[in-house]
Image 1 (cartoon, rainbow, N blue to C red):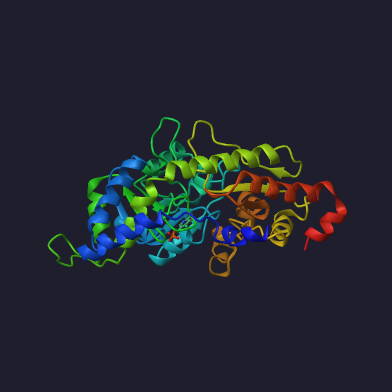
Image 2 (image 1 turned 120 degrees about the vertical axis):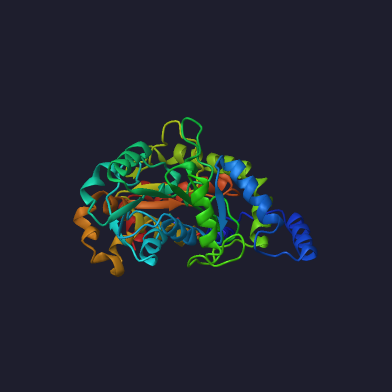
Length: 385
Ligand SMILES: *Cc1c(COP(=O)(O)O)cnc(C)c1O
């Protein structure tokens, strides 16, 4: 599979149409308005909000700044309860604004924050909950909102994976909590190369968010508070506008890839595929598989076997962020307090999925995963690195 190595390595070659992008570039050249809310920024912000079905959406330079600005806009201080089963940026954003992440174990079904375990972690210092819709799988929204309301906590959803996901009632998963944030990084289901968005529940919060994204400047250009630079420029916004035209087909193809993986792998003993969530319209951003330790040497063994065939599968999210040195000494980070997250992190492997992955290649990837198992112990020895 040598010819696929690069494609698999960049994980998704989702680019806008080249000629249309060049035409947009020429337009930007002529307008000479290259950042600070230009024509493409305005068009993209409006179209993205329309596509996602959200109000009060503000574009950002990336998802991490979106998280930091969300925390600042809601004046979150002290402790923030969050999940360890996520990308590093979630905990880092909490840390960057001077707060302490408090890790809470996850629910084995959703793989998101377990609402039943939140209450025990609340202290007088707690001011917010930052759950993650991991793999675009919705958190238990109602239970999280309940705990937050009872204890007067803000809820900021890290919805970096949740582009386009709809709840069973058709509502956007991105319109939840006090704020939800989105990442539009190149590795996500929809991208602007680097980029993100903050989606606020109300207009007042949106105004504050936009001030913080622009150095704390108000509409008259006066600095009214300390802010950062979180703006999206015109080159990224133009990329986003063009790519939005193709996103439905891109997600539909990912759905076909996911269905093929499911068909090929769901009955393989030793592999567990997380069940689709009833009624949810997914975006197929990742295809996670839980690999038992005795199946070809577990997640690391299967990953090594695939790499030997030039197929890049990633261990999202291993190791758990709570286990890295900077956070491991926090009382909430102790592995015995996070048994579900630690177990799932050990077993999980995300198989290649992107909008141009051919179904024949999905079959070849599955052949590599299952052929090894059929040949038993001898094969385990070579795969188990
Ligand atoms: C990608 C990601 C982020 C960070 O987004 P960037 O746009 O890369 O800064 C935050 N949280 C999660 C869960 C992510 O996967």
